[in-house]
Image 1 (cartoon, rainbow over the protein chains, first blue to last red):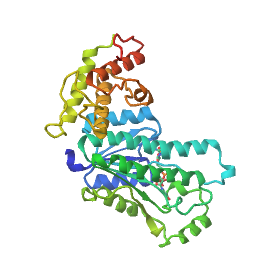
Image 2: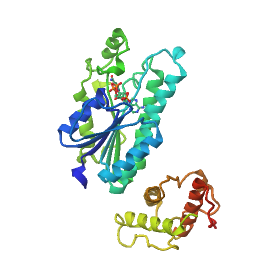
Image 3: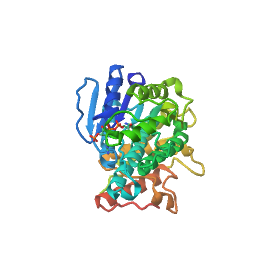
Length: 234
Length: 109
Ligand SMILES: NC(=O)c1ccc[n+]([C@@H]2O[C@H](COP(=O)([O-])OP(=O)(O)OC[C@H]3O[C@@H](n4cnc5c(N)ncnc54)[C@H](OP(=O)(O)O)[C@@H]3O)[C@@H](O)[C@H]2O)c1
């Protein structure tokens, strides 16, 4: 097994949670690859960046063909790339809907499919998808975003079953609000009200997410699949 | 013209790849009449999935084009292309012929 099951691919790494996760896993001796549409804003020794849109099939296939040739396979996939838009449904443009569906659902699916092709050949793999508390809390103003992440939850649950025979687990982490660009345009009073609906009413930290991912990707977690862990007690 | 020998050797490489993980007695033989799936086939449905993934990868490498082997079209063929190595080679040759515009000399039987 190459590099002790430490070959990890993280999507959406230019900024936000993805950029944090790159540094976090690179610092822990993982061989990290990642992608986003733009260039990464950092330069790390054991990190390789691909410029790609996760919803573009041709670009995705190219990435995985490179991974297969140059790294011989993949152990862990973290599907972090995601977009949101806060808007009343009556005021939500078609273009936003398209972008959210393409990135969050189609992108997550394509990466799961291509990563699992590599993982099944070695009979081992860990996939972690990104959900959100906006789904269980049925957050007003986030209809399309919450629905797209409900689809991610459903994909996680069904793929967990389809990929179990190959030794691949598929789980998801559901963050609470974390201060990144994703929630920059959400009004402060909305965020305050949202925090009050959590069992533990504080903002999430990047480390809270890494903690859940660490749990899912441990080799010992081979009996944990199809699960979604929401942060903050939602 | 599509080189059928190249397709068959790609299929044999895919066999080598998946045999590595199969117990003795369940390995696939490298022969045109090896039964893959269905009556007398060596592969169960999960085994077939792994095999198809391996074949698609090899074909992409050797011919530089990605083809989709298990779409509605393959599943709706009167005779499944996944019966044997020979029938699969014919089917791939037909798909590649369509992609490149070069007519294939082999029917799907
Ligand atoms: N922050 C929160 O409060 C929160 C809460 C719950 C869930 N989440 C989830 O956490 C994940 C990360 O969010 P974040 O807060 O870090 O967001 P962010 O700061 O907006 O960063 C999003 C990242 O994804 C990349 N990206 C967006 N669309 C992409 C595409 N089509 N293809 C490839 N990369 C793409 C972006 O880079 P480029 O622009 O260069 O492509 C960027 O690196 C998302 O799945 C989000 O839904 C976040």
